[in-house]
Every structure is written in structure tokens, then in C-alpha cells.
Length: 182
Image (cartoon, one colour):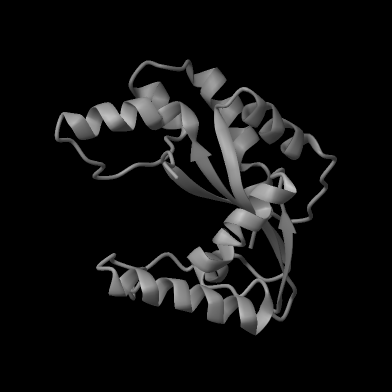
């Protein structure tokens, strides 16, 4: 199975107030073949740091069975309890035997540790279908990814892509909930 570039997006929520708007937008993007949600988890962390996980997805039942809990495996979370953790470890060991570098970097991103107590996060593992031809063209030209990241609207003012007023509105929209995020 060929797969496009994949990104893990972690979104924080102080007090989730979901009305289906996020899932609806992800579904719209899927229908336009822009992205595919490979896996999605809602992680709730109570005041004592205990984690509760709920699997979210707009995958068909067939896709969900094929892909399993990829976010859980990626971040080291046994979504299916001990059996899921063991299955993920076995798949990682098989990849290592096949010569594939697995996630063993001690400086790796600690997604669960980044979620403050008494809050929630949505973890979205997204495949960018739109980027497949670009990625392939870059590879054919001998190129490779060095880094990536989202740019703050405020940084776009300095290079002339946004007016200061528009950037402030977007920045405030992006960070309003984060102001109270532990």
C-alpha cells in the first residue's frame, strides 16, 4: 500500500465542547481526497494525570480493521490495553529485524507528557493525499525533508503575507483556548 506524507497533529482542549464541527471538516477533506484520517484519539487527562482514551475516526469499518490503532502505537499508548501494547511492540520489533529504524530515540516527542493534567487532547494522524505528487517529485530530484512546522500568523506579518490586524485576529483565534491551557 502506497501512503502519502503523514502528520500527527495534537490539539489541546481545556474543556472540550465538541459539536461535530471538527469531524465534519475532516470528512469534507476526506471526500475531496485532500486528506485521510488514518487514526484519531481523544485523550482525557484527569487532575491526577490518569489518562482515558477514546478512539475517534471517520474511517470505514474495513479501513479501521486494516489500520488498527496507529496513533497508540506511534506514541507508545496501548489503546487495546496490554494486548495492544504487546502487538505494537511486536510490529516494531519486526520492523527493526527488517532493518527499519524504529522510534527508539530517548529525545522523542512525549505526546502524553505534553498534555496538561485536567485537560484533553485530540490526536489526529493524517495522510496528506494532496502532497503525494509533490513528495514524489522532490524524491525524484534527490530531495528530502529536513524539517517542517506550522507558521504563526504573527510571523507572516513580518514577511508581508498578512496585515497586522488580520494576523492578530487569526493568532487570537488560534491561541484563545491555549491561554488557559495548563
